Image 1 (cartoon, one colour):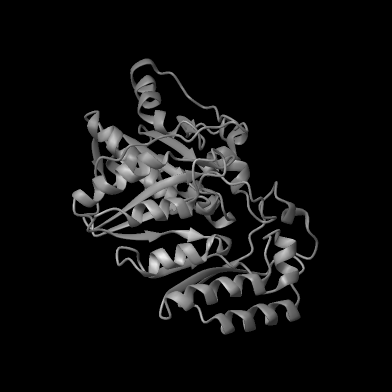
Image 2 (cartoon, one colour):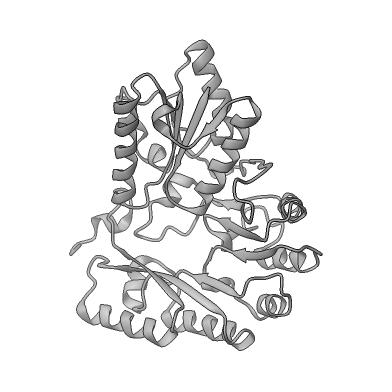
Length: 344
């Protein structure tokens, strides 16, 4: 049978889709690009914004319109967030949330062979463990992603992710190092280390922080370049910068999520830092790597944001001098604190 995938959202979703492709390929399924000719279509969804919700619904309708007999599997953050209403959607054959992604092959085979429908979304508990996914090979021959952490405990007031991804869970450091070595031996030029909240690595199991991982990677004799995904500025330290600046395997680039350059907006966002603290970390990076590329994310139109706050944010961004800025319009997410804030 032919299986097609469609992935929305973050690098973690991309990693998980790649892992699922490996599962189906090893079980004898053919992986194809065009969903219209697929027997099975798997949407790995996102729910960070209303736009991602809309795109998920569009892809569901498009597949069933063009392939009414095909099996539609909807999984990921949109499923986790809208599980109850999806149960009444006759177009969706299998619903999986952000848990049980590693069981997608088993669940699919049960549906094919026994017509057992899986349409439940499991809730998370505080003792949740990291769900392992093995990737044997990446479709790209030059770059590969590694997922080392899942979930988030930050609860920024605008963000739905802690509710749909659950609490922070860390991957075992031995497994991380093993996968890095494996990918390097397969001659991938760049390995990107990702997680939902990389900065939280090790805080759940107390088995070592992201800085500890950097220290271990520094000792490896590999030919691949190591790049980190989005980071919270708080993780930047003298030790971390000393290691990264003195080893060429580390990409000289950091993506630090700012979200706003106004302290009053940052407080309403529950971001737990000030713009002055953020700037100190930027200066620390440039102390060690003067020409380092620094990119960021900014949310505009946050509830209650005044012209003065917007100008403050604009001036701060200009002061930092980011290499690139991803600007997002605020998208209210039901269930978050910002959703009920006035003056949206």
